[in-house]
Image (cartoon, rainbow, N blue to C red; front, side, top):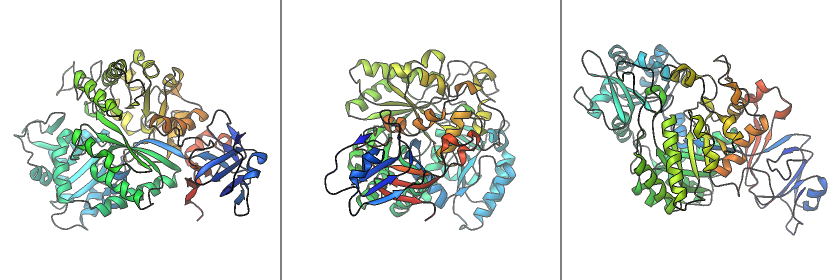
Length: 558
């Protein structure tokens, strides 16, 4: 039972007759809740909430409906997702070459003669099929000669047309940029249209200059994305890579009273894939200008490696051999250890936390070693997150808890799917079968927080992630089998990963993440009690209502 003795004015809203899962260890289950001034005033039984009822209080008998804290997504790219859905070509990662070409043809038919075709996302398993001169010529024909820029499902690689290569100045004499690779025809040496990591930035830059997005469109993209998140019950999220323009749009929305969610932004230290400008110190210097009540630019973001399918992740043991890399290729980190450590230390000294993208076990170890050095330098309370952490050497798994480093884990990596299948083509079988040791991380005391990585993940439906955490099976049923089922979590643990843990990991634990007196009244009314539902149906759980700061921001029936 929890709450305070009310003083006028009384509660704005009182819920009774509910089944409330608070994710508050001191008061885990309740059937009533009072909301006053946008905050939770009391949680408990009828005797706890009844004193809060005044003459103007809305009292709702919930009839046994299940109530949960608002969901927290610790890793997405909301603005890019909104822009993609509103203004770009979309097709599923499961689409084959012919289906992609048909989508490009239909989309291009409605564009001006010289307009860009921008969109995605093609599956990582298609690199070989798309990376031929013949495939590029087919793409040229489908687009009617227009420039084309299509991202892969990991958003780290691009498939582009001949016109796009020409406009970006990429030809057979163009050297691979640092941190990137231009895939080439083995006979002629000409670019075949596949650009890995930083090699795609030149095309991204040209494309964005040719198709600039206005401030109004960016605000619309953010609003659209947030409305989508609300429909899935998300009331707080961390955008894992922002630009000045994205932060400006968020602040403008908040200043006008239209940012109805908590947002924590990550400002890029380096940028191997997006083509944002500026990044690094020039971006960090501007961050505080865009701070507002609900927007907190509190993190920096470092890409320490790429992704395994394109052999740009850094590993302790070699990749499977191929003609381009030989038998001993392990990949490498994007920053040397000394620079990484100095960057994290400088961020901590400036009062900023850090999210570090690591997909290979060598990059995870480097990040943990750097955090250890920063902790030893006196920065004991700075928040650090390792994003993805797909592969973690057994010796390093306990270090997350020892160093107080949060694990930012993404749902498409802990069940069978397109990306794990692509990883299995380049990593030894015994390693590829051991992705995302979530159970071990929890058992060793690490703070495990869930992120969708939307739009890398096709949808921000966190219940798909929760079902995957519990079953380690593809919740869509498309991909058979289970991926390292020994690493499964319980349902209660999985819900905590996407509520309280996420809020704690991004510095919002005192504001949201649990239904506790004094916190923001961010909560959901679900269509079922997930603890009473068959585990294989968890992904179809829906929010009937989503509330943020005591205001209903989504009503499925309304």
